[in-house]
Image 1 (spheres, rainbow, N blue to C red):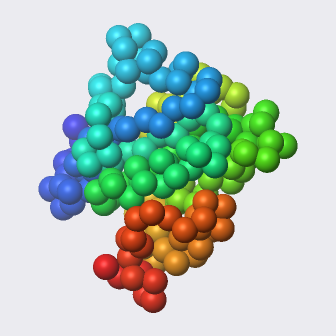
Image 2 (image 1 turned 180 degrees about the vertical axis):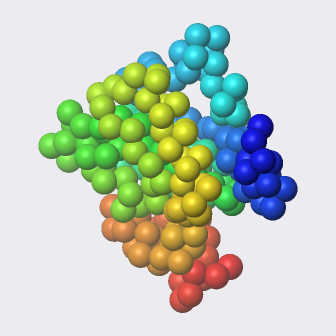
Image 3 (image 1 turned 30 degrees about the horizontal axis):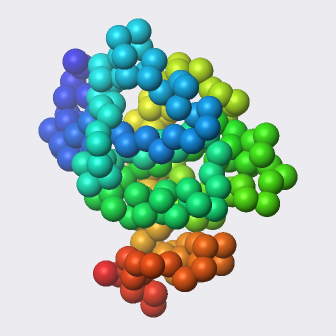
Length: 186
């Protein structure tokens, strides 16, 4: 380990901990799940990069959304995101969360997931190979280093806009607003 990296660890240990301890929760629909198991098994071994799958959103700080997003699944995605503790990072995996993918013309498909929750990174392709996840993780490390992986802060600041978009497509949500509608504070 060189001196610059060691200095960075000593100056900002919480940032380095967040960067190298990405506890991931996956939301997989359709074909999106196909590429995840190889990433977490021995061939690619995501744990060596600090990416560990977890069972609940309360344990996670990385939300990986794969496959198409329908109106029905959007509600679960929003709820999962809101249950995650801060700081939290979200990555859309594959073409479907970006623009609807091959379901782009379906009435039931959500295109542009970033209108409903903040997305810190996208992995394009139909389906991206497992290596693309590692490229995304190393890019996310860079964003965390530069304080640019701040989707969770944007969600807090612009919560009323996100909530309005959510309720526009889903109707009145069953849970109360996470933040005060006026200024984004709890």
